[in-house]
Image 1: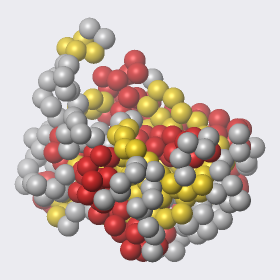
Image 2 (image 1 turned 180 degrees about the horizontal axis):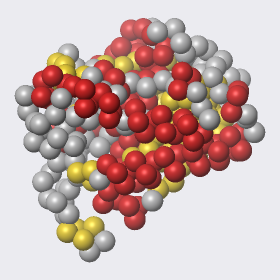
Image 3 (image 1 turned 30 degrees about the horizontal axis):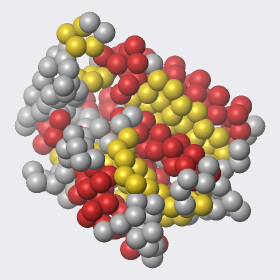
Length: 326
């Protein structure tokens, strides 16, 4: 079925507080040179104590409204992609619906961790193309600082807070979505997790800290093998040549991972948009933040072809090839 969904606007928000590499030197045994060399990160943004994922989400949507002069009162579905909801229930999307005064919208949270935003686009395209919905907000938002262990030097240098949002509408004349691909390798879930109601996975007792726990080496090996394979699948599905891709926008996990994926996939790093240098790894927010940075800097333009790929906790992955229509 041909897509009938089009991205019409984008917005973003990051908290004002900066956590620099120099700041981290005061917390753990690390230094700026080591962090930059291994991750490419220099800063990350940190939400205030009383600032939560729904607050960041609302500010990203308000940024979208202001910049594109859009109305959201008639949005009929809100999809909030996050692994750091304000509450177990109500959903963060329901809180966004209330705070924005959108009266007639469905509201769901989607947790696919770092692949969350690309999964959100996947679902939104399906809902609109099938005719079930006409106008959807897809938000990728995280307050990862609230589940980061700042005594763990291997993870605390990575994560930051932020939000990005897109407005997707029915438009069969100029649809955005060309092809999509998604999957998961749940048997590797213990490589990247945060415990909640259970601390047992596949009969294995996990570190029950309530903080993010990551086996960086295993995640790296998985990502640099899985993502290039997924990229090939997307290209085959769409019958688009790699040379026709204007921008590659991967999850901003770590610059070394991105460089390895680009090398294996024959994608020039200069054709890649990422948001990690000054925002860190913001999980489901990295891709919309990267897209919006590209728009703001005049790099990402209408009618360009963009390859998006999210990957991370799950271990889940999802990608799309889209025509940028904003």
